[in-house]
Structure formats: C-alpha cells, structure tokens
View (spheres, rainbow, N blue to C red):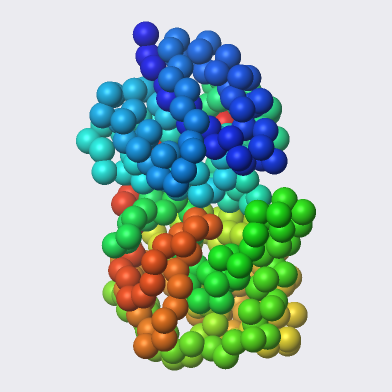
Length: 294
C-alpha cells in the first residue's frame, strides 16, 4: 500500500482549506491507499512535513494552498535523496504553478484531476536562501508584493499586485543592476528583474511562452524602463507573449546567473520574501516529478 501526504494550509482559499481537505483525502485514498493529512500552523511547517514524507519514502506529497505553501513543500523535497511525486491543489491568489501545469483553478476540479494525473519531470531553481519553482522577482515588484495584505489579495486577486506595482513605479527611480551569466550580461539601471521557470508569471500565462516545465533553463527578463509610454507598450505584450520584442526589455536564457546591486534590493521567490542581493540562481533540471493532469 502506497502512502501519500496531504499538506493543507487552512488559511488559504478564504479559509476553506479544511473543507476541501476532506474531498482531497477521499480521492487520494482511492489512488494511493493511505493518506497522511497535515495542517500547517506556521511558516516552514510545509517544508518540515514534506521533508518527513521524503525521509519516510512516501509515494507522493500533495500541497493544498497558495504559491507560498507550494514553495515551502518543494523546498522540503528538493534536497532529499528520495523525492516523492509532487501534486498541487491551488488555493492562492495567483496560482502560477497551477496555470503552468494545467491544473484547474477550481479546487474541487483540481482534486478530481489528481485521480489520473501523470508524473512529469519539472525543473526547479536554487539559490543561497532556498529554492523556487516558478519565479524570482527583484526590485519594484518584489517590494510591491511585500506590501500586499491578505485582505487586498482576497478582495482584488492578482490585480492587488498590479495596484501596488503602479504605486511603486511612481515612487522609485531605477536601480543599478548587474546581471552576469555565460549567456547574457547587463550592467545598467533597471526597475525590475524577473527570472522565470514557467510560462506563467504574476497571473500572465503568456509572460514567457517559450518556457517548458523541463527545458533546463532560467528565463531572465530585465525591465529597463517603466514610464507611462513603456507601460502602454508592455501591457499588451504581457498578454500576447511578446515581451522580448519590446524596446525596454532585455532578455536571455541561461542555466546560472548572478545578480547584484549597490542598492539594497529585495528578492521575492514564488510570492514570498527571498532575501536580498547579491545572489546566484541556478537551475536543477528535471529535479521533481509533478503530477500533471492528463
């Protein structure tokens, strides 16, 4: 009999985590046999739970919550010798990883999709302070995300980040930013740097249309200008997947990149605070098997 661990953040999804957990447990029991249900109470609980599941050689770990909860679970699996299959039930505001995997945003449908979801290799990113499964943001957006309250996320959804981002653009000048890799260099002023692993960033599913779950690449974007005329050009490009064609964006793909700045710039990893520069980011190719709907 296989064992699966279900990690639930009860405060996610307008605090409906426990309600959805009952349905999830029923579905997972049919697939795996034994279900070990854990509820998070504080930061890093999901990391500790996932690490325990790996040590006990569980078949799978399913995380129910927002991108922050999923990131914690991935961090707990990343360094294990035995890494269980990883599945998700999205309950967050943006749910970028769910978008990239094709997991339904509706929790009930996401749970049903786990019945026959197939293990698929997925890259994850590593840096000094931890791991990331979807995106690193450096600069204005990282500051903006930190300013968004739980109440604002619940009320406005992904637009809460956009509102805070617009405020940040008005209040800040560009930063000195140094980006170094074998495949691309940047040493100039910029407002924002993004390192993406999947196609979906900030709820924009065509942010990086060329990204694949296991392409072995970091997709680096540097936003040099964010004045009004640039924003007018960037907005449609975010929806159509043509950011690379805009004049104010520098982009390249690489396997390892170092980012530094004389300014004190915050780093945001998968929606949560990830430390401060300088940091080096690298790709861990096909490091986890994720349960992808068929």
